[in-house]
Length: 289
Length: 320
Image (cartoon, rainbow over all chains, first blue to last red; front, side):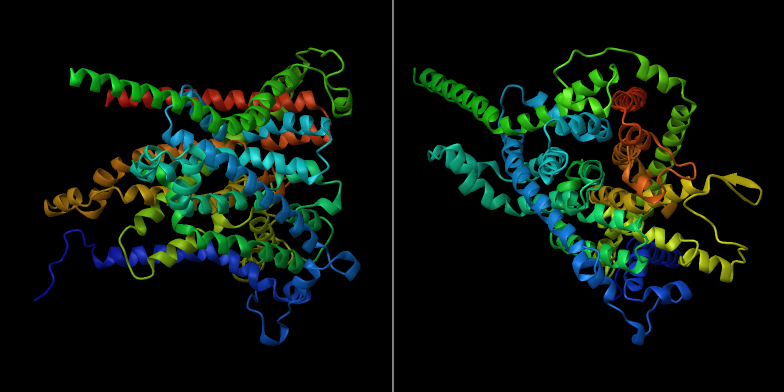
């Protein structure tokens, strides 16, 4: 017995065309990243002599790009390790504060019918869409007046402010997807709001919270503009993206820059794929309607 | 009697719930409001004040202790400056091309990956990599690829395509291709922006496609409609909403994008966009008032375009 062919099954020609298209898309998406990764394993002189030889010969595999990128200047490196620590510090701080603020705000937006809720949600959406570059001028002036532009604290403040709207948007979607009955039961049982949030809501919403935290971390980890605006004068405070961009102006061999870029990319890619399913759901929750 | 008392107790319970919601809602939203107030509302008011006053970076320590020096000069200078209008034009072209490319590529990919096949999950994940990549890594890689001395694109072009000399992809304002002048560097930046942003469009359209039920398509196929007709007449109309939303978001985001262009070209090769202007006014020319005015003008243009868009889409819905 043959299986009935679905009326939607495409013709073989269309099928081939589709796979060619997907293959080309894959090459375009991944090719450059692979190129950067392979070059980061080759000595600089080899890259300049044979730019078309992308695949490193076994004998010329060279990991010195990574070590000289990461090591401190005193050890003959370019000090990226220190910049990575700065980035980590700011990004982790941002995650903690931004997530705490957003859990509360998102829960209120998803569940509580309080007066002014429509306006608050509108303001948050408006800020999410508002040109951030316009606000950078007064933010810079305010933080400079407060003496915070030359420190990681100023950056931390800006990152929290920049990530709260998107974190609220994502977590609100996760909260809305939870069954409300459990919370109602807990309230009827006499649980206070903080207790209910901590021991009922958060445990079931945990995957969504973690996914949001990862997204916030990625934003802070990748951010470049405010780091440039605030910290460019103080080398010891550079974040990883700022550090690599600044080193590019100092005639640092491109293999070292690529090694640094790949090194700061790997944690982000790993985190993203770890949380991919929840992240995608949270980001695109508005699109399914 | 019993029903009446039952009703009052229900109403009471209802009012206590709404009162409780009111109080709790405000308490839970308070931290968010503090952040929003300090980092968005206050700066928004300040940017308006700065745009209408004479203030430079050196004035920051004395800020708030002296009366404001009101003036319209910032706007007058900006509007009289040809480079302002040029930057505005570049920004509009840049955002429009990126919007079309990013959403278009995302749509094609989402449709191509709609039917399941072995390895689809991995392909999807790999297609997201350019979006997840930190911007600095993406820029470093592209700059290396396009480098005139050791970049693979120029090496390939000279070896196999007969290019006579290396092409400066990141600092060429216009170049002739078969006699047609094209803004080379601007197109490179647009391609870069499409490369990093199309995966997000792809994600959104894929999510929406999951809500499209195949039964109508099957019926159409049984009635003899071909694949192209089914895609354009049945699937596309259902995707219109998410496509318009993505266009809107992508336009807003690209209109103000700074990192991509600043890192790739620093504004060389005819890629001077509005966001770079704001930065230059603030950092290089140390003129806060002027930077604020540029930023405000930029927002005005954006809000005006959004208003036109909203009005147009309303009318379209009405007609339908």
